[in-house]
Amino acid sequence: MKKKLISLFLATAMVATMAGCGNTDTPASTPASNGSSSESQAGSSEQTPAVAEVEKPDSITVMIDGTVPTKENYGDEFWKKYTELTGIEVNVIQPDHDAYYDVVGQTIAGGDWPDVIILSSTYYAGYAAEGVLWDMTDAYASSDLKARHEAKAGSAGVVDSLRINGKLFGMPATHGNGCVTYVKQTWLDNVGITSVPTNYEEYVAMLDAFTTGDPDGDGVNGNTFAVSAAGFAGKEAPYTNYLPEFYQDAYPSFIQDENGVWYDGFNTDSMKAAMQRLADAYAAGYIDPTTLTNGTSDCRNKFYSDEFGIFTYWAGTWANNLKTNLEANGLSGDLVALPPIAEVGAYVDRITPAWCITSSCENPEGVFKYFIEAMQDGGDVQFLFTYGVEGCHWSTAAETLWADDEAKAKTYAEGEFHFLPNAEKPTTAYTKAHIDPMLALVNLEAPENSVTETAKNAQELFNTNCKSAFIVPTTETMSEFNGDLTTLKNELIAKVTMGELSVDEAYAKYEADGGKAWSDAIVESLNQ
Image (cartoon, rainbow, N blue to C red; front, top):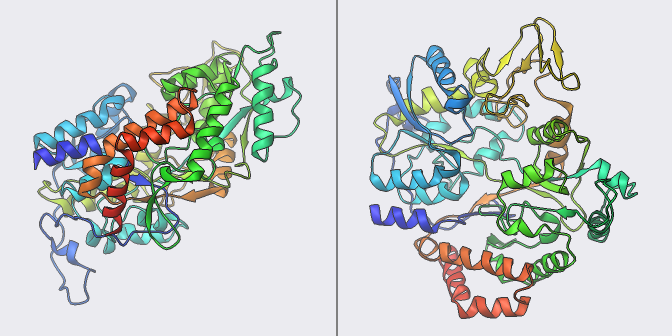
């Protein structure tokens, strides 16, 4: 078991993908429920008898990433408040955010599993197939949470996107969200562009103006890059989201056609055309050459220091974060969120991370009811997970924040809700605790002024112009080959982009190095 789980951890770097057809009919290995409580069985069959009430757990051990308040961001106060509201003690395992999945893999392989764990889509399907996750399908079907999701448009579909052959092994707390392309308005003004691009030809014209002109207004032509990103291809689904204008209809991983048949999008003419577009843009100097090694924080810092002008990044809250950080650096925070150009059509709404219960949990039904379900209760617990702790993350006290900076100072009246300065980045304010209020699946009365117009507008643009993503089931063949296959694909995309290989040479190497054979084997396993 441990050997299989270690293999899974190393090899399932691309187990989720975009598909236009809903759920797959592919059989998958699905773990049995770790005990079947009476409540879990309720609603799964008309013949199931009524049962005793679910036992409330005294304590729960959770493994979480940095999307939940860290110790530095009043995490202790957050969980203390949770205990006050629920009566449940929480033992928290919270590795460094960047190392989170390394620690998850080691923990799962080691066998000492937490009760609850947050998993991205990349790991969710694989760990479900390996029996690590408890099947919460019946518990959800008979829960009050299901009714709350059905009361808010679009929420049930987000839950369904996590189903694997109809089964649920995790629960979303929000929509997945996705990225939109932000352009600095001052750069547009400085190069004389009066309307944003609506197609690829116009987009390339903007790239050229931002690269060869003087968009940053420093009096020097040609000392800027138009666009930068965290890699030429993303490390997890949806992979193309940081450079969508170049990928357009191409997709480098596994996807279903209109008949539900799986194929590898890397083995298509669309992908070859996308790689050539990347190569042409790189050769023209439009793309920051450090894109190969950038992390998202590198990109943000370069954006804030005015080194490039086009940044495809998360919608909603991040629109406001980008604006405030630009302003903190003395730059204009005026950003244009672009509707997708014609060739892109729609941005991709990623598979949301999932709150999962492990199959080693002694009381999974109780944890589901009193932790998973309570997180979206439409009341006090959901408010905590959304806005955090009063006096730490938000306040209604009369005060002036950033009083020593006249340009940034903000004064609030008594009773006016406002987020407080971020403990780790005191020049900015918090925008949420864990659940983004613009992405919540359950209705919750929001404090006035809790969402900025900048964030709201970017989120609405994305919501209006996005398409859904779906889970790809994990097979043994995928677990065996997909890690090496993904590494090879990303290497070839990078080499073509940087001019080290032509597209034809890259695909010849792809076949010679075994990539085509691995891909064909995975496709065959998905379609069986």
